[in-house]
Image (cartoon, rainbow, N blue to C red; front, side):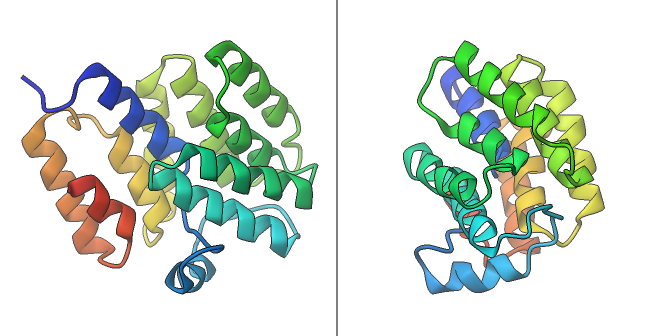
Length: 192
């Protein structure tokens, strides 16, 4: 018997990847300082787009999809050509999955100058939304290994890791993440 029902497993998987993944720069002051330390490579030159992107990631990890959508919408407004912001906006939108997949695909198509980190995130989101969690876990694991000091990457990897359905494995996983990143609040929320 697992500690998560189907809805919770889906929510855990999609929330962590979308995604998304982050930090709320628009709200607590501590999150702003944390965002400056992020190691995931982003391709936009717009500081405003980055600020809203990380705020959207924070909201995503705190399971606030409506607030995340608003932040990603602002990131896209600040840099309309930034593909990963378009992907994250689509991921957090309150739309049917078929429409979401189409919007994600449009964002991926706009990722001509994307970094490898952005491409891994987008591919993982596409995989999750297409029902292929094992591919998503592989991609997010790669992202986490290439960014070992980044709490976002570690959080996403934890949410897609094999064994997360076992209560004891899930608790151990979140405890390990908290030990590695004690100031990263979403991990504490997940453990609770």
